[in-house]
Length: 112
Length: 110
Image (cartoon, rainbow over all chains, first blue to last red; front, side, top):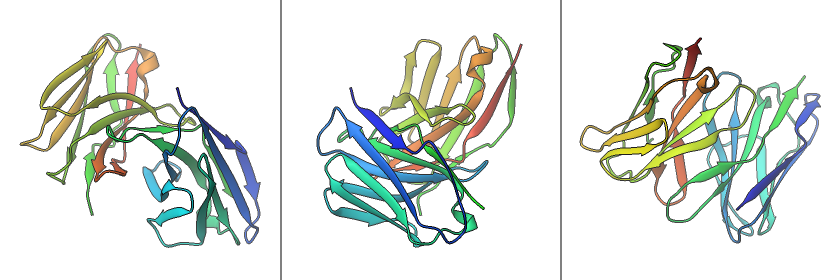
């Protein structure tokens, strides 16, 4: 079965600092990968998804970017964090056909 | 924009009773429907999925789908305090994306 790793688990960053969150998956090949953000007490907001290496679709224009340098690696970045970037960042793996998605443990980001 | 609507709750149910969670969706072309459970501070966990009209049972959980009414529900029988969580409804949008509802917070009272 597939496993999703995310790090770091928690992060506290000052406004204006850069960001790099990493997601790696095991147990599957050529998965669809997703980045979601969940603000406190809110639903899931899809940020980016990728169907393959180097292929990134952006759902919400903002100061974040994503990259997929390897089949099982998905990275979320920012050059300058905003207070509004605080939240729970979730990487998800999608399976073809059933459209099911499975979530990693998440990274809780606090921007001060 | 495809929409998935859930009552945010909180929904309070006594232990041992049936909890009923509801979800409506806007896209008639949706084919796959999912229920996720999210404990406070944790990531969502897939607990049920359904593709066909009718009921699907898995242990204490039953998912119900009515495509004509664009309505999907989750029933939890013999509710336990460990069922206290936020339940997220999700619906596929095309072949690659899911649209999530805002979630319903469920509390099971001992």
